Image (cartoon, rainbow, N blue to C red; front, side, top):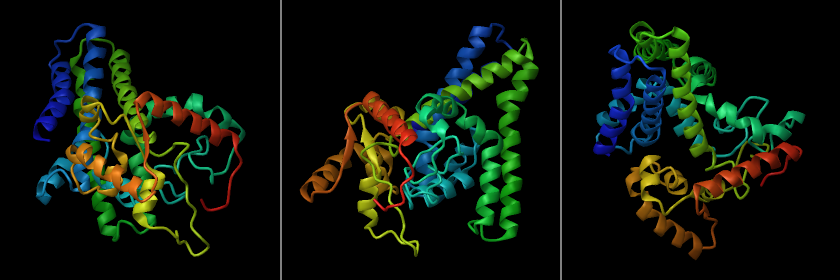
Length: 328
């Protein structure tokens, strides 16, 4: 984890340092450096901050706390992510209106229980555009919108804490923009629109990569989308719920698993989110064997390409079928 952290931080910051020295005069090289930085950004998001905010990077709480701030260094926010991901997504996986990962704008439909519109029939085509701008939404409006919503939901406890988190959110955003965009605009001897376009390209690469990895774990044909009863209760065992709503992919590629922070082992991650992802490959054999022994579901796709294909099929299915109101 330490070596991976060093690699990912270097991959993110080194290109930005070169850009901010003002020695980059070629448009192509500027775009290449920003794209490399985008890959480092994705690496930090999937392989460093993800474990840290879950508390699984280290046995020491302060190490997890400070490495969780790498989320802020790449333009997002650790506090908002912890509520959205740890609290809502991991507790209420694939549950409409409770799992914030499938609570998407009206032009997307990630659950069979969500209202269907005519344009959803094309979502398997245009969803990739929204995946590509997902991190751009994070660094601009999304974190602010969610912070306000979580305050209104009572998830930030006190008004004082909300104001403190809002102040910190603004501060971290200003810091990120200063070295990722403002300084390059000042230092790079090229037209400002070229620098801005290269910056946007970085986020397109990052957003498309991260969104694809996360979404193929849950928006899949084999996964379940349970509904609560009239009292808001899901009559199911939590561990079984995670097995029913989560899918693995590409289990044989160690490099791919290293690159994406072990997120190809999403089943193991959802069952044991407090364990560092470097252990998931070995744990997966035990989980798969136990699931098979007791006749429990264990969803897995052999390759990332086949997982993407199934994800597209699920998006098409959700774009065609009407809303269902029966619990799975």
